[in-house]
Image 1 (cartoon, one colour):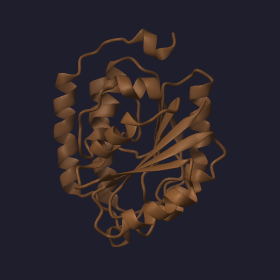
Image 2 (cartoon, rainbow, N blue to C red; image 1 turned 120 degrees about the vertical axis):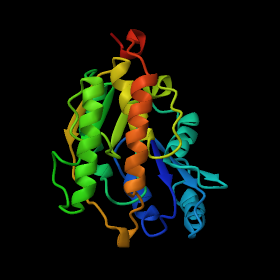
Image 3 (cartoon, helix red, strand yellow; image 1 turned 180 degrees about the vertical axis):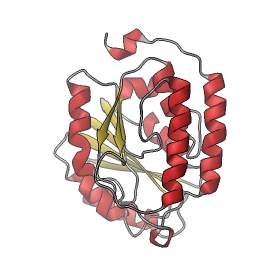
Image 4 (cartoon, rainbow, N blue to C red; image 1 turned 60 degrees about the horizontal axis):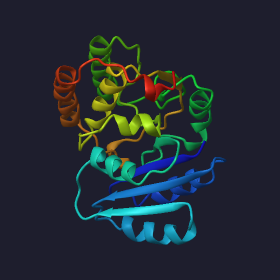
Length: 239
């Protein structure tokens, strides 16, 4: 099975080359789509150089203005051709070298989507209030969907391409994570969770998510919990 790795990027000049190089060197047939979401720090200049360096593998899309992670993922998904979609953040918090277990679960027919949990594997121990906010949001999501996730907001999501496209994602910002999760469970897809290594960064290192994003995620949970009704899509699960 082939991969399409979608990398939303916004002002990541310090890390974008390293993460693209690491993804490019993973041992899987793949294409990489980087969606620059209106960066103003020189990230597009670096990407143009990387397109030459990784010609044939890397394709970059340049948004004229910042629209949010969800919009960037939607843009990448429109051009995705792989059997499996990997969402990879442009920083160095998540490790491309750990795709293997997630891909194996999908290739062997067990999973339609795989979440990498930052709390089940080795992780940098800091930012307590981020941890508590994530746990609260994950608890509410589990109550709504009868799921057993430990990390709904993880940036490590690997999803079958046909499944991802059936979700018809509408969210533009970080509430994208909420919409994907609610729809996967409500539509009856098979979601697995695996431990991953998480190298979290602080605000002085470029972290952008704030408590405001947590509030938006909470409202998104209430919205999608009401809007998305339970239904089954058996033809999409291969059953």
